[in-house]
Every structure is written in C-alpha cells, then in structure tokens.
Length: 219
Image (cartoon, rainbow, N blue to C red; front, side, top):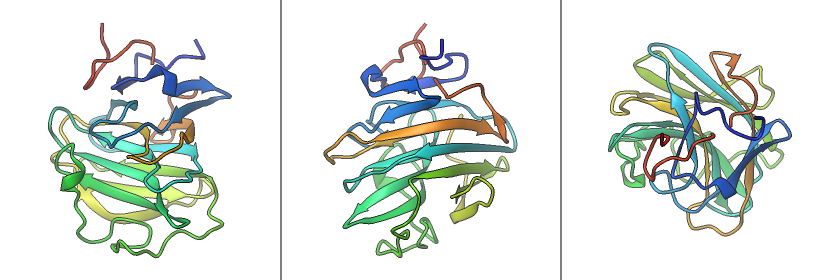
C-alpha cells in the first residue's frame, strides 16, 4: 500500500498518525511538539552491523526558532542518541547540527569540538540566506565512529562537526524525525527517500502497525 510505511523495515516511537503520510512519492512528516525523548513519530529501522551509510533527501523550510528535521540514530532503553538536523535558530538564522547525547535527554549533548555547520560556537556563523530548502543529509559509521554530512546537490557531501563514538547508543536504529520543541506552527518535512549505503529501501518510507508509547511496533 503506497499510503503506508513498510512495517517490515520501520517502527514508529510515540506514533501520531495525523502527523505523517506518504504522498507525492515522499514521507510527509509534520513537526510535533517536544524533543527527541518525547516528540511523536521518531521513525527508524535497525542499523546494519559493521560499516553503514544512511542518506536522506529532504525538503524543509522552518519558520520558527527550534523547529528542526533530519536524521536520527536512536538507542534502545535509556541509552543515547545522535541527530543530524536542520534547525531554525531564530532571527532568520539556520544551521545544520550533528549532536550526540549520552542519554535520551537534551541535557547530555556533547558540545566539545565542532558540532554544527559553523563549527563549535553557539553564535554561528550560520548557513547563507540562499541555502536551498531541499538538501541531503547523511550518517556514516565504521562500526565504531559516527560522522554526519550534508549536501546541496546529492553528489558532494560536506562533513558537519567532529566524529562521535557510536558507543553508548545501544542497538542503534536509524531514521528520520521532525520536531519543534515549544515553537508554534506545523511545518512539514518531506523526505523523498532513505537509503542504506546508496541503496534505496523501496519507495518513500512508510508504517502500518501502531507502536507503543516508547518504542517498537505492536503485534
């Protein structure tokens, strides 16, 4: 069914079926309130063993500070996570950030070294005003380290921040999310595809069964 996510690959944490659909060849994911640890519709599938690369193409045009969308590496239980998201920073400023947390909380991010497209500062520099609203995001892992990249053409990728250890993200699952913290508005991230190591997993990602409030799909 082209209107549903393939349940064989994908699970949804805290599903809100009113906030995602598959149409026009894309997964259309409306940003919901909250952060990684409590927002709806964190859509993931199990990462392969060893080396892997996951790439998505997304169209995203946030308008309020805190709205963000992109890739996520989600750990099981109370373990950590990493995100590679395009974020509205307010005052017409935007950047792409690659952050790892040692827990599901936003309070444990590793801000050492470089972690956004401007480097390692909270004050920018930010992305240019003409940065496109359609772009590519990528996670790459050698099984030990995790790196994040972006591209504006799908061919040339630029690394964002420093590599982070995959350790501490138990049983990693990789996928997409869109959230807005406490910001107003309902921006939609249109994910055109999700690919492992350059191989597309069917059509636009899409989930049939409901999930429990924390993880996984229900029988």
